[in-house]
Image (tube, rainbow, N blue to C red; front, side, top):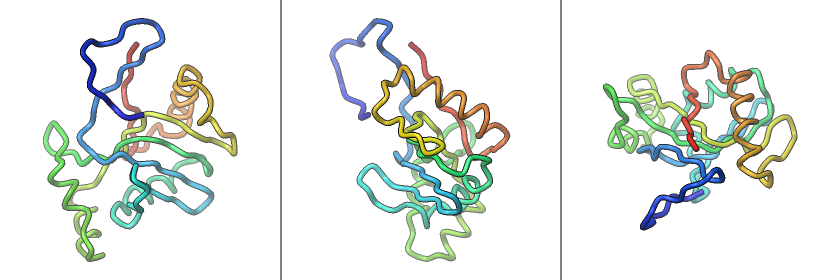
Length: 151
């Protein structure tokens, strides 16, 4: 979902709120030994974040599709400038930056898992599925963090 400006914050049980992160929106998919990172415009980001590919391959689940944000931590916040530096044509530079400024993937939605398509399910069902997936699959992997949400 895209954030949009409104005059008043909607209230009610049907609304969920999440932080706006200063990163790249990204769909991360894994099918067996293949990991793919795609921007919201459909651009392939996989080669720019090899540490996230490795981290995804280290997860116990072998088939999933996550929606989230790629960020680069700097001190106690995230650095969009450091993130922009990662989009570089030279493979050697990408490798160097992956080691110097490793990216994190902040997960805010689970669209598919274990060959089950969840994209059409309402968010009220997907969020609990995401939380269970995170607890079983992402726990202990420092490259993945569940984005907080509140109602």
